[in-house]
Image (cartoon, rainbow, N blue to C red; front, side, top):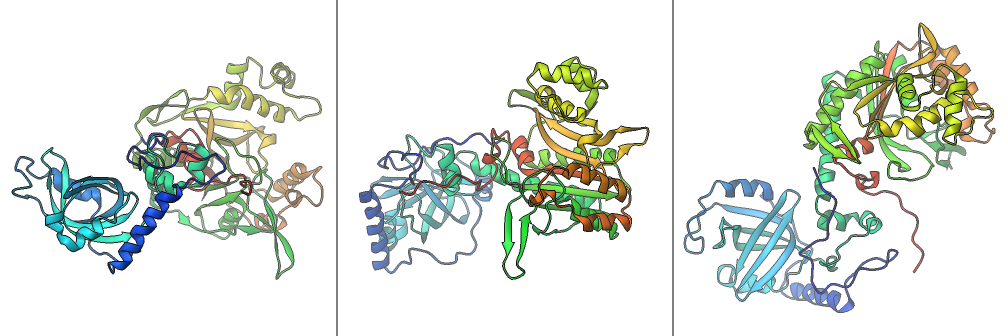
Length: 517
């Protein structure tokens, strides 16, 4: 799996010392000027320093596979043995040896050594070689072979200048190590941070796997509105905005649920959306105000149907990301061998805390013992706080925690033989919730009643206090029995790439505004 980023060992040794946290790192003025001087020399030579289209480029990984099939014994300086290839990428290492220049060239798939010889490329191209810097983008034509030291090498016969880099790379001794700067300047993090690009490639593969599992089960991918009149589907504070032309307040969605359920009413019996969700709340290693959510709904299913789906998604995603079946993460030993453990909410609470989950007084006593306020609070809310405080951290997982207290699940169908229990599960790994699913409530009268209870006490100008009356109307037209599943994609990627923070798997996480300099 990808490892945490490390400093770039091949950056300019003369680069400036790392800046303060609030500053933007750049090269010293003289180094920048030297790059601009080379920019001017390129223009004088009639070379476009910003490049042109270059066809026929092979990925480094593909070229390396070709090289692996070559005989490494002959001396390539005397008898080049490989095919002619064309590669393009960024200069990560540049070293001169008189009439020879060696370059480590990198693209998304890997690196390869380039050898540029003055005799081989000719005097005109050698003038371009003299204008190269770390970070420049070039294309190279040449024969693939091995150097005298046995390193796979493209022996260049042609050079295409593609883009001049006007900033020097991070200092090779310090690198771009400040976590906030790495996230603010993700472009540099991707170039120089070891494993960073791999992690985001894995994210793409995971999203592909999620779609693949759902498509195989005949789900249709749809898109709901991001701007909504009413924030619904979750208990979270929304971002507010205003539509000028219609002169109406709107909010950014906090969940995907209610519009997807409308589609179940409309006869689209298996639907899902992978989309952005926005919650105007705090940030932490597991929370970002803007995040990616999967929600899927299946008519005629229930929460057990969704357990099967969640397990299939997790297993397929792990395979796509190259995640091993057994690994350590955040102090927990993870075993991804299916089927995953299932455990009842009350059983876990009793085992960890020693309380009687069916006795409100016993639960309240256990809650007070760990500092949880109990006065004038619903017993199920107290139980939920106790579970969060004591039980979650013990769940190495993957484990499906099933059968939740009904009062904290306003969108969930109750068990037919016990209305105090909601048919809900949460999937936990390393003490973190990864997925949430229900047997969906489709009784419009009960749904309206639960909404009113949930919203009681909120002020009229609070956008979360507005009931989605059209959703209730849709339920009155008849929504089939259904199972619904939600998975936080960022947390899924965080887990499967063993990232320590959710901000390490979001390309551009939000940050506090920097002070004006």
